[in-house]
Image: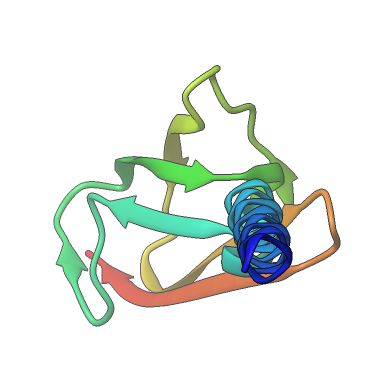
Length: 115
């Protein structure tokens, strides 16, 4: 009887240890699994602007690099960014591209017009 009890406790401990290690590994690898989270505010696709400039802001969580129309933008310690962009009269394309430290890329394009 005591031999069976030891065996049950040993197996239960190993199973519990396995789940703890698996849970911790999942918790630590969430950034790798999720990739870059990109939220852009101040602009919508198809929007028409009366002004020739716009303040674009947002958040690029877990990003290593952020570019707007090919120009690198710096992120603060909370992954927030704020940048003023200038439009030419007529049709404009605004491209926001992020890359994380694992090489995953996320890109959003906005097609807007300016009067």
